[in-house]
Length: 182
Image (cartoon, rainbow, N blue to C red; front, side):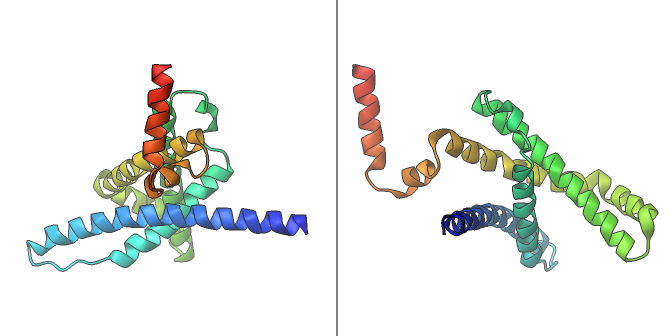
């Protein structure tokens, strides 16, 4: 019975983590979709690929979890939070690039265009579209990993408590004042 409870707890934890990752990334990508939509509306071009933003967030949330399962970025865990955050941001952005390249390759293989078609498609995207996509992912990951690593340092759920529990900030502030006075 204990193994089944452990399995359920782990599954619940993984699903919650996936949902939080997805929620953050989908909000971030939907904001960029809205930005693009508003820019294009100025030229009477309709744009509303919110579905693509949601699908991208679903995939990236899983890619992040796979990177965590492979323990990417763990070697700097004893460094200051700033270094760890920047390192994980760059590392996971490169991880996303790797998955993007894999996606292009598989797509071209499935459509009988082979590896040459994958290389051609990748190089067509390279200068502008791919760099823009990577910049968006990089800046989406920066606050994402800062908050996640801070949560790891403070303890699981502490940031959630700080944001959503009333009176907790007052208690924490009064403890800090007493600590500094003593």
